[in-house]
Amino acid sequence: MNRIENHPILTFPERKEIAFRFNGTDMIGREGDTIAAALHASGVKVLGHHFKSHRPRGFYCAIGNCSSCLMVVNGVPNVRVCVERLEEGMDVRQQDDKGVLP
Amino acid sequence: MNQVPLLIIGAGPAGLSAAYRAAEAGADVLLLERSGKAGGQLVKQTHKFFGSEKQFASTRGIHIADRLTSRLEQLPGRVTLLTDATVLGIYEDGVVTADISGTVQKFRPSAVIVATGAYEKTLAFPGNDLPGVYGAGAVQTLMNEYGILPGRRVLMVGAGNIGLIVSYQLMQAGVHVAAVIDAADRIGGYLVHASKIARAGVPLLMRHTVVAAGGSEEVERAVIAEIDEQWQVKPDTKRTLDVDLICVAVGLSPLADLLYQAGAVSRYIAPLGGHVPLRDASMMTTLDGVYLAGDVAGIEEASSAMVEGELAGLAAARRLGFEGGDTSGLISACLAELRQLRAGPAGGKIRTGLALAGVYA
Image (cartoon, rainbow over all chains, first blue to last red; front, side, top):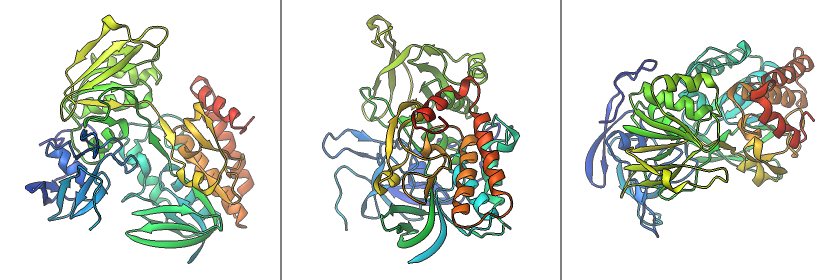
């Protein structure tokens, strides 16, 4: 896990565990996490692949500006996971194409 | 259609300050914030601020956000703060549309203040799209908001204040800083920040650039090199750093899309960070009744963003007929504070930029 445990200024209180799935695998995040934060904490940096070049994609800005972090969430493509809150039971998948709206 | 006297877009340091002054003068304010909480980028600033006491010097940014938000209560005008509220457009008939928690709503405000902040620039180099090449703000978000390690070993690109401060924050979180590099020949940020990380043994390499990021699916290494007087890579100086994170801190640009779309006249002014909407001394854009404040008006610091916000809030309130208290006196005080914040060598860039924009000529 990549969670910070000791910090000279900040404290990070224990938060409730949130179960979700990434590419079909069960994962655990924390209440208040964005999807991208929960994935990063579990060591997942590759959020998808470019639809043409197939190069891996991660986030860049983490505040909803750059659209480098698009994933398929509960069947809906092009979700900016850097600003989308994690919810119990979410189905999160890497996006490798332009996506089709359900 | 919702009639509102004053609509403020963005609840960062500028928007919160604008809301405070406008409501103090008596105006009702609707403050829309796209993220889940107010404070803007202050919510991840763990360092203590410099500057004057009026802008909360020696207080950590994370606490300034709370203070700016909590002082909005009990004012003559009412401030309604909505989070998860993204403004979609400012139309020529004065209508503003917003996505508020998934529902599109229309507003007809009598005045608007755009305080949308900035976005991070990036750098062109092979591999810059690999996961693990993150903007400095993203690194702060992961570390300081979510308590997540952005990596184990980092190359920091950029030795301005953001690069230096975030390097120190990375060290506080337990991340090894392999080097801080900058293409300039000298450190751009305050030396007090630079000496803190230099004392800890971090190499500060000036006239260096990142040549490439390497790795198959994510960053596994970075190649850096020295550059010559013509900013070309000296071939024999290339070396590889074992890092899993490349943090890019090469500056910000105004996030002014709403204003471009609405037809506000803007101009490319490099010292202000890129394309900047033009404005008068009261922070009004070329669109009647549409004001702006903070980084969207030109990249500066949170302290000046707060004063610009106050100025725009006062000017917008006066336009709406709210002169409560001493509006003219407060406006003069804001202008004097801005002059003071921009005085001295550190303010040279912003003074040049504002002169090019025709403000404070």
